[in-house]
Length: 272
Image (cartoon, rainbow, N blue to C red; front, side, top):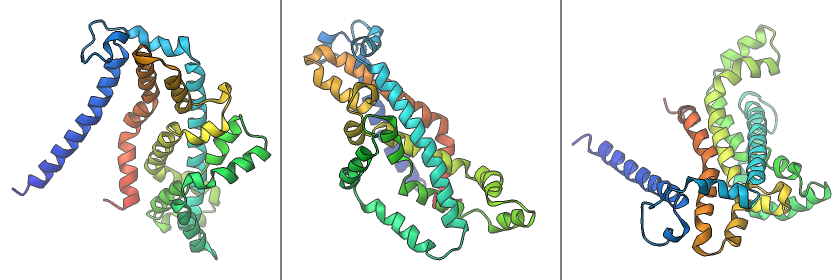
C-alpha cells in the first residue's frame, strides 16, 4: 500500500504520455495516407505514401521556412544562454547597491504579457530598420527574465569559497566565470537552451509582424499560410507531413538534452 501513490503517479504519467504519443502517431499516419483516406475513418493507410514528405518542399517554400526557423532559433538560444548566464552570475555572486531591486524588476516583467509590449517594440524595430530582417527576429528575443531567474537560482548554489579561492589565485572575473562557474552550469544552461529553443521555435505572432516577406518567414507563420492555402482533404497529407517535419528539431533536441534538462531543473529547484 505504501507504494500505491508512486504506482498511481506512474500510471497517470504513462497514460498522459500515451495520449501525446497517439497524437504524434496519428499525424504520421495521416501524412502517409492517400488524400481520399484522410477523412474516411480508416486508421491504417491502404498505401503508404512516404513521398508525401516531399510535397511541402515541392509545392511551397518550406525549405526557406525551415532554414529561417533554424537560424533564428539557434541564434536566439545562443544569445539567451550567454546573456542570462552573465546576468545570473551578476545577481548571484556580486553584492552591489540596488541588486535586489533590479532583480525584483526583472521578475516583475514576467507578469507583463508579451502582446502588451509588441506595439512599442515594433515601433522601435521599425525605426532601427530591422523589419523584414533577421536582426528584428533575433535581437528583441536575445534575453529573457525567466532565463535570468533560472541561471541566478542555479548559480546561487555554487559555493562562494570556490570563487574566493580563484580570486586569491589571481583569476579575473571573466576567467572565474569561464573556468570555475560555467562548467558547473552545464545542466542549467542545457535546460535554459531547451526552454528557449522550444518557445522560439513555436513563436508565431512576433515573426508574423516582423518577417512578413517570404525570405524571413519562419515555420509557424509558413505552416499557417499553408493551412490557409490548402483545399479540403487533398492538402491534409502535405500539412501533416510538414507538421511532423517541423516537430523533429525540438523532439531531437529534447532527446539529446533530456538528462541535462532534468539535472538542470532539479538543481534550480534545490532538489538533491
